[in-house]
Amino acid sequence: MKKQIFYIIFCATVGTGIISCDDQLNQLPISTTTTESSFNNANDFTQAVNGVYSALKNYPALVYWMGEMRSDNINALHDGNRDWQGINDFDVSISTTGYVNTAWRNDFNGIFNANAVLEALLTKGNLIHNEALRVRYEAEVRFLRAFLYFQLVRTFGKVPYVDKVLTVPEVSTIPRSPVAEIYEGLIIPDLEFAAANLPEAYAAGDIGRATQYAAKGMLAAVYLTRSGPTYGIEGPGLASNEYDKALALLNEVLDGPFSFIDDYGSIFSYNNENNEEVIFDIQFASGINGAAFPSLLTPVAFWTATYGSNTYGNGQGSSNFNVSRDLLASYDATDGLDTRKGFNIQLSYSNPFIKKYIDYANRGRNRTDWPINFIVLRYTEILFLKAEALLLGNLGNQAEVDEIVNKVRRRAGLQPVSGATFDTVLEEKRKEFLGEGVRWNDLVRSGRAVTIMNAWLAKDDIKTINEITANHLIYPVPADELGAKPGLYQQNLGY
Image 1: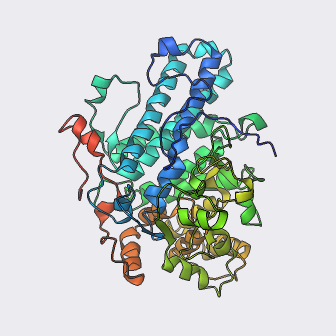
Image 2 (image 1 turned 30 degrees about the horizontal axis):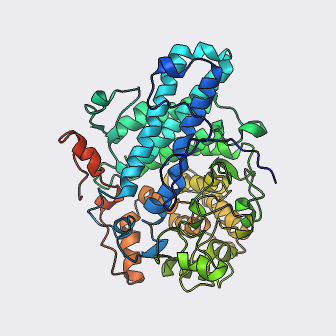
Image 3 (image 1 turned 90 degrees about the vertical axis):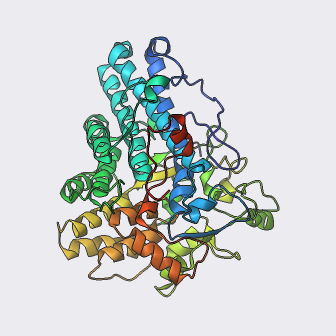
């Protein structure tokens, strides 16, 4: 089936699924040119806005290596010196790790490009000759800038506040700003503007662009994250108690053009992309901008043993990315009736691993060419975020929470529960969103990260992972950034 997608220029790397370049659609090199030379007609703006979306290419791989890997969903076993090893083991010496550097640079490159487009829209936007389109482009780019800054804050805590195009010498003078300033000066205003000015939906050729509902859902997640505890670190939580703001936005999204799909597997079907469950996803297409994420957490030996080739392996040697025993037990606590277990996990293998996005019959050419989109935000998560706001903000009644939890449980083939607590919501969400990069942020935002992670280490008797402290809840500033101008940044505590 021909996919009606929004074609975005992406860079892909063989093996890790993160960064290298292959210019495919003649993208304007806005990261290395001036506004005057880059924007001369309406088409230049179209290509430049498309180019800002390219920063999302690496998002799935980064949330796997730095989120899913970091959580109690996976107990990875390495076979040597792998970049993700220190991340998995909560090592304090990971500031030189490639993924940590990539997370910082990828997002700031995207922010630089966003700022370049916003500056051009301000000075030369009249070239578009369509005010509604000019405003939409501004709203799209501001959504993307907010999205990237939200990832930075959740990953590193304090980061430089950059809202305009800077020269290299100027960049070296910008210190890290408090998280509250990033939220209040950039993330929240950008998402508010996007929510007010983006369309509800797009025609087929533009599906994949941000909508007002994506902006509202993301802004609700921002308010929930700000409402989380501080842990005594300069991380994403501010204990701001903005659950009411989040709830209002979540209800607006739930009233939008989305719905709850009764069949869990069809949400992730290669033949059902951009379905009514999807609020925002990252578009991939084989042969144009294929995805690497489906097989990143699968062992190479599986492909060799099952298909006689490691073409679709992950380039990680004999490493294993085992689904944790604790998570498997959680699925089995319902007498093995949870239909999500068999869909999400490859069980007929010596080391169970996540297979959620793998459809071998619809594969692309190789491990970095899977033709499947990555869902960033979907209807079911909005439901769970609403339950979170109701419980932690004391804003509703128990019946509302139970209705949400049981709606999801029924789809999984499970019996309803009553008196669902926030711990119930967390565990149900863990099973629902395995492989979607959600768990780690949920743990941190909820205030339970340190307690749950250390309890998991004891329960599964894991000796290779260090004891988790509050300092581990954000990553270190990359060593390269610290060394660029010594003294400009201070390293996060504990690293």
